[in-house]
Length: 311
Image 1 (tube, rainbow, N blue to C red):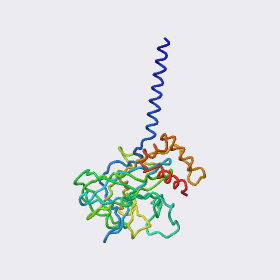
Image 2: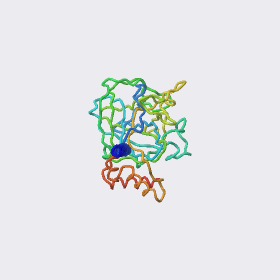
Image 3: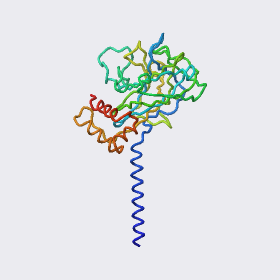
Image 4: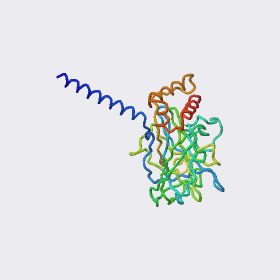
């Protein structure tokens, strides 16, 4: 009887140990946190940096974080009008929602600024392949794909453009310098440099459907070029129009880890609380560095020092 009880106790310890290990491992894993689903092919919206005879054009769609999060990577689905080998760079920016980071009382040149991206990006959240703060790879999804409507050259009211055929590509991005953001409602914007062609960010269903994950208060996609900046236009409601006007999401994912315990930016104890929380969640600070993809303990410390000093 005693031996049987000891065996039961030992078995219970094994189960509890396995549960603890499983929970601890899960806490250390990064995962997909934002997923708008698969493209529906209804829209391709230009998103590219400026180059010779080409205006910078930016397409942005929103996402929500319900707690402090470290973003470690992304995927972007789009259409290119030339070979995938001609994709030479990717830049990603994160924007607050208007009126943050904006001059709210100026006269805009657009129908509305409500629920648009802010005038300017969050400086600390910009990542660029040319600056080695991200790396990327490409995968061909479909060699012949049609975007039924496009917004490319006419970034103005009631100027939607015809269909475009090209190669459907998924770009996988890893942030070599992860992005730390507090809870909030943000916009994700990517620009893709394509030598001898363009990149059209492809739409996803709105409302989001499986395998996408619903976004609380999901907003529609916006676009601007350097002539329109710092204002933005709603791709569906303003540019394509109609009655009723369409609304679009864009096709992207964001991966990372939610922090179980993080300090409040601007608070005196923010850094200490956050670092202590990271050590507890990941087992140690070196483990957090490895799990989140920071290049070093110093890099992690600097990122969270910047996060805690944010206004």
